[in-house]
Length: 298
Image 1: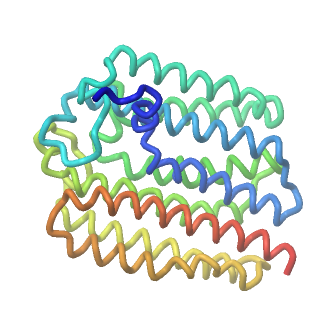
Image 2: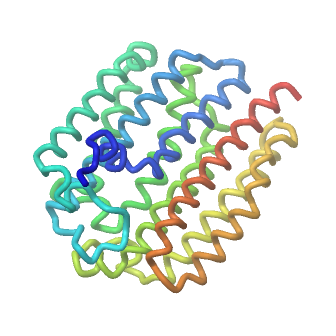
């Protein structure tokens, strides 16, 4: 039975990864709310652009991984539309261009509000979204994926969202970027742990291929620890209330996922763990954002 096109494209957008687009915007906007500098218009456009860039990046990954031979029949992860022959490579390439172009056009409103620095942020986000798996030196193929995920989904996205609200920079938004970036990195860690054997064959030099699976396990628990430790640092550095510790409600789930990662026997089950790791990021992000907003009223 033929898969409906809309369902096919929804699947290709990788909805389980979209928490990485939502959470940074929520956190950056909530800090702007705390500082009484929140703007609905720029937050809404920033959220739309974040979605578009994330989806465009996923389309680009689908296309370039197929072109480079990283997606094969031995793949354990979710079905890739191009590799499975469900979407033609040329069509996926055009979808990538169209989605990224949509993000660029929408982002011009933020450039009009925030100036050249917003243009630089937007263009670099678009560029590295493609260069993650594309270009002559793809970041994801050379052990740099984790670093750039941490930077762009943490510092760039959170601080950038705050900036288009407040038109100024915030040190607190920089600290808040750390747990957001760390939890986003963990989505990639699970992906790389699942695919380490296939990535080695495809000469895709992720951290798992370069340093082994134990390094990925250590990275996962380190990113979790960094995320929750950041709450304590923010509390003592800034006049926020105890509400900032709301994300601790997600700690039991973090402990459970850490246990599953360290005791995994079948890498196919990591597809579910990846989804739950993205969900943890979303729950943490919502609670984190609520903590800033409630601190304003405390």
